[in-house]
Image (cartoon, rainbow, N blue to C red; front, side):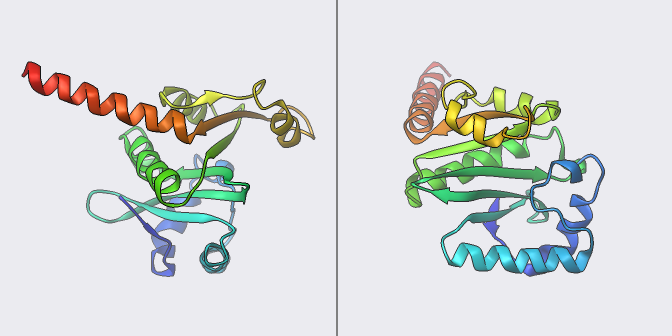
Length: 184
């Protein structure tokens, strides 16, 4: 489902990223294939320095379909950036990718809080974030961060995922599976 970023995936990812329904919402925009390769190399180097965590999202046939990243890592927190190619919209990959990434971040990388900065006009992403049972709208809760990301006008909503909240979600999911197995 997820793998470390690899320059070899650049062509497939670039073709998916430049779609007009994806491109406006990508944080690391590349305006040419060569620029995308350069940004991918920079991303790999930044991860080696501990500045970010970046993974390629794969479909069930191991084809690259998007990326998921934790940017601006500071004090055991960072900002999530995810994009998935248009042919894969609405097929459940977003939730699967986030679940796998959060498990890695919270249980292997010592991250405590993941923030999501989502453009208010990006209805698809706001709906996806709101569906996640471990996500909290944090515009008021973390007003300092909300004001910082909107210093040039109210452009973004702020969501957050806390490690404890995610862990509680996992434990409840496991309990529900046990109950359903006993009932079957």
